[in-house]
Image 1 (cartoon, rainbow, N blue to C red):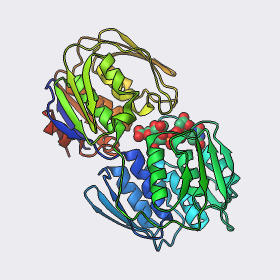
Image 2 (image 1 turned 90 degrees about the vertical axis):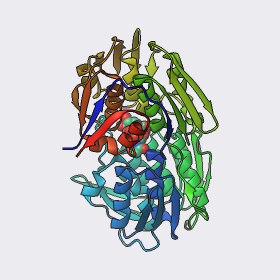
Image 3 (image 1 turned 135 degrees about the vertical axis):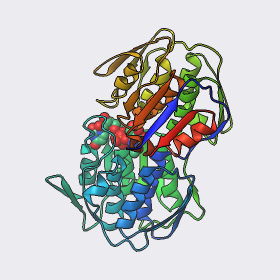
Image 4 (image 1 turned 60 degrees about the horizontal axis):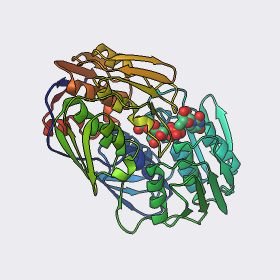
Length: 420
Ligand code: EPZ
């Protein structure tokens, strides 16, 4: 079993180029299913979920080539509309191939998706939107069959919750549906805007992405962007490296990131006492002394504080002076990292949506298992600042969303290695 071995207590220094966004490249790869010409993508992170999406595309008859962070995807001749359970279960975002396949072929066969165990994670909003657009859906023992032989028809859809995945699925189904689709109370995350920008570059007619109401006018078919399409920077990976510095000390310059996507994140690092300056696509951070507890942190939909950064920002706050209260409003089971942090000496009491973190003078290295993607990343952050050695298993969960995390941190002075 692979593990990351970290000898903590070494301040970081240097420059880190932030990877492309996992949660942007996955919907864009699904959207390639709609394109009848070859698509070129750049700034695609080399993460295992990207390979999962590529496997799904090739299983549908698409052709995928990769050269580092550049990808070429050709779905001109896709010849299937069903995705195996094994491929569906590799990640949550496999479910947004539903909208893409319905948009391209008018049918699909798939099962419930996988992904981090953060709670029930139902897909009711996805399914009810497809039905509203005219799909006939059966669910036999978890195998979902969708069909719309006459194609989908645009309509008004109001989401009960601004679900990221449901918004993406509806967008992918609506761009080639007959007539107009209006999505109200939709997700506003930057990854939604990235997907919409990609679809528009392919010839889709979309207005309002980034706001809470998106209008789509269906077109006959999508072509492909004329130029290579660049995936936006990963705001959660950027937050992770800022947290590594807050835990380990030292200073970092993050490049190729988008500070504008992090307006709910950066002030928290300043609040805890870090020196933070952003300019252009760079963020400079420096630890100038002991950390202080932050005001109550409530996870919200964008542009609020992102749930994906909750575990990550908890790591440095474990050794901040004072008490920080967390309220997790998005997922039911997103404190699975608190056990590992407590075994490193943290004082955390988690109950339901709330976790109370009381700072301790220091953490110490321990052996732990990554509970999920962002929980695993939080344990890495904490281990960098802990005294002594930590060993973290289930690294495959961390590799789902982070491109070469040990190489990047080693280059910034961390003592971290991967034992195969
Ligand atoms: C996306 O998941 C991200 N994943 C998650 O990132 C992120 O945490 C989440 O959005 C929220 O920002 C990808 O983009 C691949 P949701 P998604 O639909 O689409 C409930 C990471 O670490 N819900 O916005 O699954 C759901 O249970 C991952 O990178 C329904 O009830 O999130 C949750 O409580 C983790 N019914 C809430 O809505 C539905 O039909 C938000 O889910 C759909 C969702």
